[in-house]
Length: 256
Image 1: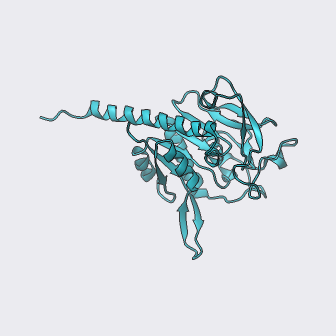
Image 2: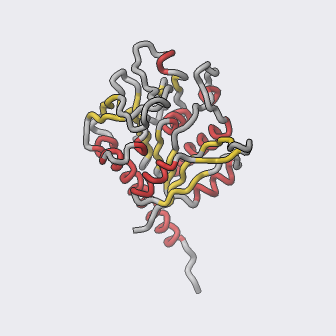
Image 3: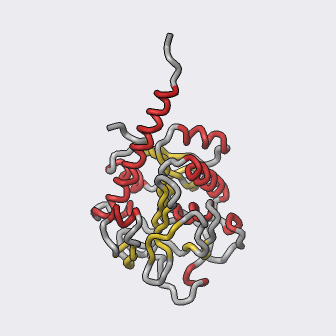
C-alpha cells in the first residue's frame, strides 16, 4: 500500500530572537503518522500559484487548529476576545479550502480548521460563544486544563460519515475553542452537536471526503474513536492517491 502525503496547515510565531518562524503542534504529525500517512507542512507567506503547486503533490489536507480567523473574512467586525489573528494564514487556508473543495481532494478540519472551512464556503462564526450566545456551555477549556480533558459529550447524527467512523451516537470530547459556527455554509451539513446546540462537526455531502470536527482528536491518542478519525481520513487519501496515479498512467503518452 502506498503512503499518502497529507499537507498540514501551519501557524506563524516569533522566536526568542524576534525572527518569524512557521510551526505546527507535533500531535498532528504523530496522529497522521500513526494512521499511515506521510505528513508535510504547508508554509505561509507564499502566493496562490505556489500553494496550487504544493497541492498538486498532496493526497489530502489537514486544516489544523490555532488562532482566530479575522472577522472581516466573514463580513463581521473585530471583537475584544478575538485573538492570535494572522490575515496571511486566513488567506492561505481559505484558498486551500476552495481548491480542495473544487478538486475533490480529501480534507479534514480540526477546531480552527472547521471554522475556516465554514468561512471559506460562505458561513459565519460567533466571535465568542459565551458573549454572543446566551445559555451556551463553556467550550474554552485551555490553557489551565490538560488538552485531553473531556469537557462534554457530542451527539452524532446516525446517518453521518462521522457516526460510521466512530460507531457511537454520543462521544466525550475535549474542547479548546471559544468560537463556533453561527451561520452554517450552504454546502455543509452539521453532523454533531454539543449539549447546548453548538455545531461540533460538519461534512460536505457533495464532496467525496470533506469533513471537520470542533474538538481535538490529535490530543486523544489512546481513544480508539479518535484514532479512527485519522485512519479513515488517511484511507480516503490513499484512495485519492491511487486514482490520481491511475489517471496519470492512462493519460501518459505511449513510448515509440
